[in-house]
Length: 373
Length: 259
Ligand SMILES: Nc1ncnc2c1ncn2[C@@H]1O[C@H](COP(=O)(O)OP(=O)(O)O)[C@@H](O)[C@H]1O
Ligand SMILES: [Mg+2]
Image (cartoon, rainbow over all chains, first blue to last red; front, side):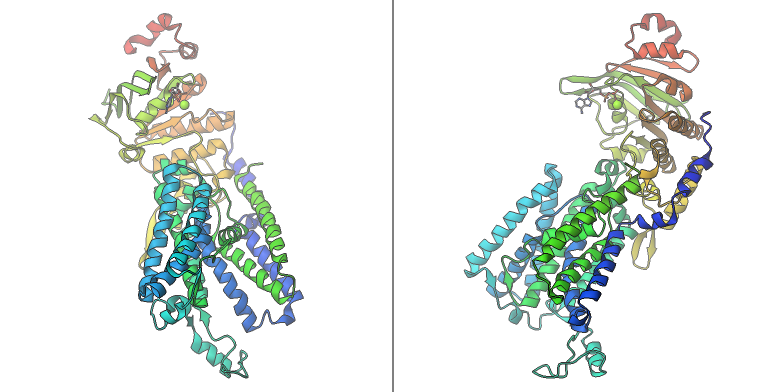
């Protein structure tokens, strides 16, 4: 072994990388940069529009939370090396399932919700099982499910109620313990108190006179925060999280070291379906109705949030916090353009542009990590 | 000599009509490096895959510490103490060294009701083990992608040793490496052997084999051409054997009774 290698050589070489560059190499970089830019932009253009008042903040927070809920599932699945294009169809399916079971069949709301969760998570498992068993790309398998589920949803709605929108869910959910976990609000007392103390505006007229304009945190936001914390913890702090990275990073290497790759992937498909069902349940409770066409294009919005958040489309790398930031950027921009009075169709232009920028940045980051050229 | 750690007797492996192995025997003893040489397609990888539980031999017996063994899957072999390092499948580049090191064997600790990945322990062990192997990491969270090919092989070997491998199989660990990286890997093999671990080292480079091997077995078209001990065979003779065995007759003397 006379290659003259001096271990200190290598050491000096790696230390040469600057601290700054070091700090940059993290999946959330794009998300953090994006969120700063977006806030600066809207502080400059829409400050007087009420976008940053209590009602405005609540408005874009709710939209962001919706994106975040499905982004968490999509994020973990993407890091595990797979996609689910059937998220949007699953949202429509779950909503109609709850409505048919509760309104049409008269089940108690909690039973309808639990049954829907079981069905949808099982369908997620079928998605994953098919991907594993056939060895086909999840892109194709879940694309098939995108159509199958959407078709089934519309068919089921029309076959049972002759309509594609089923109302009456709110009445059915009245007083139901489980429904309030998705449609209710928390901290209402605190907000009333803040309203009384004059910290936030109160309605000065109408039936809600004296009530604060923001009267609590919707459960939707609570779910979003809880799922983000759960996902982040699972990914970074547990053994299972290491398996998620490994399964997406290189399934064969992971298998050779004994990681149960198939189980990890199938579980992540199920978790994605779970997130879609949470989204659908909150939405149904908020609207008081279910629609067979709900959730259209949601899978792409989830994937875009995840990619803006720094995850690699090829799997093995990403961050749940990043995905949540991606969702926040999404929500702020979508609602911000509205507050700023900008034509809303420009939102799609923005989406496309930011997606491109994010992917380019991510590719660059990956090259820095792996040292490839 | 003591009972071999692993003894493979007349292993045959057929893939449909393809006879990849036509009766190969080999034994490995603790603390020895047994080099398996042969040209591409000779059946080296197929042979070690029967040892590591990836393939079931069509015929033949495997004894591990004197007991007949029947591995159903790679995990069985790993649990028995047979670790395999594959050339390109050793590590996941995007993951940190520490996460790679403990992949599939994550240390855990309890915080209240939840069991979490004990990153502190993983990081400490990784840094210490890497230092022993002569690799200075910037930190345990350095991505494996920033390591050279030789360093990656070394991490994979260190991992196998740390998790108690008794037999370490290396499938062409040096074939894609430069001179300096190769010598680092060979030094690692030497270090591992001195710990009393049995090493099966696959290569088609005679010089690499000569640098660390205690015994040499040459495979050609699914058959063993013979096993020679260190000092009983010259690099040129080994090279000729690999080239097809035409020189077998003239080599019989030097191979002794081990054919
Ligand atoms: N899974 C398989 N199915 C069919 N043939 C195989 C399979 N694996 C290996 N072989 C054949 O067995 C022979 C030996 O291959 P291999 O063990 O990979 O050789 P080496 O590692 O010595 O280069 C080759 O002819 C190869 O085509
Ligand atoms: Mg081979």
